Each structure stands twice: as C-alpha cells, then as structure tokens.
Length: 206
Length: 204
Image (cartoon, rainbow over all chains, first blue to last red; front, side, top):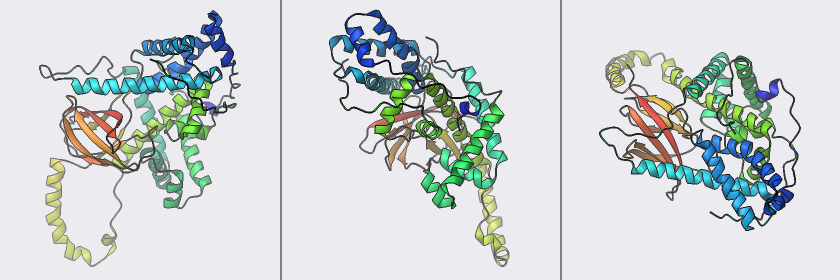
C-alpha cells in the first residue's frame, strides 16, 4: 500500500503520444514536436535527475539532456523513433553516471587550503533536512509501536536489505504474514504522517 | 555526445506501477529488463513519479530509524546466564571484566550502526565521533554482487579505512574524529560504483 493510494484513486495511465510521430515532427522542424518532447523533460527527466543527483543545478542538467536528445534526433542518430523513451532513459543514465564520476574526481583532486575545503555549494537544504527528520521520527514511532518480532522483520528488510525469502525462512513466516507486517507498518506511517507528511520537493520547477 | 539508441524492443508498460513494484524500485531491486519498462513508464507518468518519491522517503526513513532502533535495543541475554551454578564461579570474572569493559566504553563506546544513502546534495548521514561504526551502505540500484570493496576517505580524499562489504552485513570501521567523510563502494575489479556522504560529529 503506498501512501498516496491510501486515499486517492489512481489517475488514468498516460497515453503514449506515438513517439515516432514526435521524432518525425522534430526532424521536420515542427515546433509541436519539440513541445511534446519538452513536456516529458519538464517532468519525467527532471524527476530522474532530481532523484539521482539532487536539486543542485537541476535546470542546467535537464537542459543538457534535452540538447543531447534533440541533437541526436536531428542528426538522425535515433534508429528506432518509436523507442524514443528508451533512448531518453539511456541518455539520462549516462549523464547521471558522468555527473557522479565527475563529482568523485573533483573531490579526489581537492586539496585542503588553509585547513578548510569548500565541498560545494550543495549544503544540506534546511527544509529538506526538516522533512527528512520528521519522517524519521514517524518511522521511529512506527517501529517502537509494533511487536519486537515485527520490528525485526522490518529491520531485516529495510536496513539489512535481506530478501523476503531470506526473512521468511529465518523467521518462519509465510509470504502473506511478511507482506502484512510491511503493509501495516506503511499504513501506520501514512496515518501518522497524513497531516505532517509533505513532499514539497524541489524538482518541480520547470 | 552521441549515443545510439538501443535496438532491443521492450513492450511498453500499459499500467501504473503496483505497490510492490514501487517498493522494489525504491530499494533498487528491479532487474534490468523489467527496470527498462518501468522507467520508460516513469518518464511519462507523474502519478507514479510522485509515488516513487513517497516510497523513497518511506524506505529512507525506515532505514535510518531501523539503524537507530538497533543501537537502542538491549542485547539478548546469553544462554549461560540461565545456568545457576555459573554465577558463583563467574562472579569474580565478571567483576574483573566489568572494570575493563567500562574503561573501554569510556574510551570508544559501543559500535554505532549507520545507514548510508547515496549523496544527492541532501542530508548526509551522521554519526558520533570517537565511536566505531557499523556502516550499512544502501545498495539499491547496484548490480547483485556478493562482495564489494569499501573505502572511507576524509574530505581531502585521504583514505582512512578500507575493507570488504557483503550486502546485509555491516562493515565495522574504527572510531574517527569529527569531519566530513566519503564512503565509496567498488566492485572487486576496482570499478567505482557509488559514493556516500557521512558527517561525523563530536558528541558532548
């Protein structure tokens, strides 16, 4: 049970606009093709980059991916236009990998000048820190309010990242019992946080 | 930068991600062929994007809270404590041992489990200075590898610890002084897979 599914019906699945046609329009210079593609970038690509790299320079990163993709389309590098989203995903993943590698290299090359190092401009965001702290408090309340055995199940699953099979075997649980323990905890978390839980994330800016 | 699109055709996902898929995705446990399909859906579905963000927040909160709970929970009693005749014989040893134990506790304290998340410019994991740590790096999204190489460096890139990490088992690291550290996971051939931020703070 997800938090959002507690109270809201699921919206309809987005309709595939026919990416082959979108690619064709972009190649022909039709601005509506760019608009359709941009819609994906303003939400979907932004979501992926935010999730992997955080809010720092997010607009620039989205723009970089947009340029790479549109350039490739215009150059005719996209061999299967109907698989445009697969291509976008590949570009996003490579960009993420490049950013992470670049950040690690930059830190490796950093030297300590006068005893202090500026790590980067990306300090902890106070609002995000507060939200994460609140969520952790809710999770603590959930874990403290359930039976010790159930707590152990959740710790094995979320902290130790054991598989459901491993947990069920070690704790002599059926799969249904395991699922129930998890879903009850999540429902409890949702109830506790219904008013407090806020997902005011910084990724929706475009 | 030119990247040729993959030629492998994957059927497009026609439905929203279900709850178990969301949870598995947030924990990085979706294998590649299915992952491709799910992520292509996520690119165009705002509803599922929101559910994934909520799932991320939940999984992260549970990981961190679990790590804290583990520290606070009392250790189970040893079986030998049930043996009636042992306390008489063991009393002297216990008295001797307690002195040493308390001395060590003052010096370094108990080991502190720390759940590590990928550094995203967000909140760094925090741990007290002067305490040995048990690091539990999140391996979500990483390939299923039985053993990783783990390295911990200070903010100048100087290595302070290196060891191996097996998923599900924490890595014990020695006590460190306060400061910013980075924990890196490598495959055994030496490819860097992930980096985590860790802030060690002095505790009054």
